[in-house]
Length: 297
Image (cartoon, rainbow, N blue to C red; front, side, top):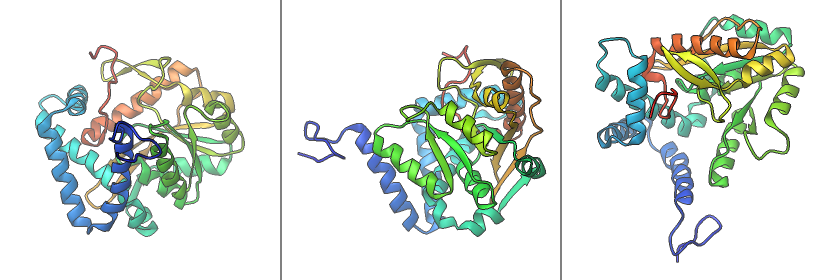
């Protein structure tokens, strides 16, 4: 009978336990490999996943079909996007090995002054971003350059996997608040951080609840979380959209102009517009393998 992470289940580990073990092996094994070999292995894995054409790959292809310019070779773009997603995971597993000099030195951020000015004012800053590029590396860069921040994490199963990701992000200088199951509602804690002059980083292109704000996104209706706008209105914090993408030898991003305060719906639409501009410019680096638009099956 096999021993799971705390439970015996009919002689075999549960699927959730196997997932946790796979991530643990990734953090240990991938870090031990030479970087060129690890990169080649992850590219091969992306290509194999593309050939299997599973549900996530099909969803990614459908999402890219909405955001890509007319005439785009969708097969080629989907392959590039899968390789980009594989690079994200490779870098997550190896991020501590990259070293602060590389994480900071190879990051190019356009209009960074908008971020620094907001931080210097001390009234709280909300960085809202889509699932683009490597947001973990961007968070490590932010903390390493003098701006500690708070973020929210979806609670994963099993709990050991969630704790593994919290420990990983905490080691990079982030404060992580669980989306559910915490001692206090995340909105209240985030509001406290902002009123203390803190910074938040929030992924905001996919609604994880059923109360998201309808927005027009690439010509159709999607739902995005209203939390960033609501927090900005409740605290007076500056709301800055951010988009990220990969370069061959590093990472790039843009701080978009601050969203003017008005109401939650209008401000969330402004975030969607900024995200759309960044995604249209770098569609292969948008890692969205889940449903976004309301008219999708």
